[in-house]
Length: 134
Image 1 (cartoon, rainbow, N blue to C red):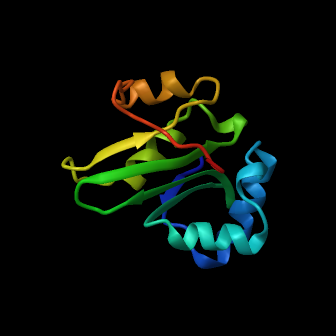
Image 2 (tube, one colour):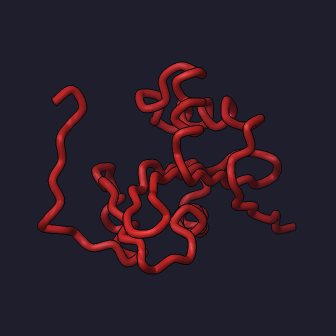
């Protein structure tokens, strides 16, 4: 029996479960305390969670003005659910339908460049970055 994948906005009651999911999937260094992560989610204009069999299997968040610019901050899919369309569905949910928005991201993790290239992202020669603490 095939189970249904649900992609939707993160509910306030799920924020701590999402934080724990991220910690279990190598992103604990980016979540911080429960309070810090709750603020991170609250300050993100777009969040998405992937749920399968009542378990969180993916999460994504984006920051955007909703008109022109967007930053895709996190896209995380549990290892056992990769290559099932979960990441693609999360990115689609966060980015929405406005083709006037230019979305940017950092694709530093292994396999990320190939994944995002398949979604239409291209390496930019104009992006600049100021690292944390700089």
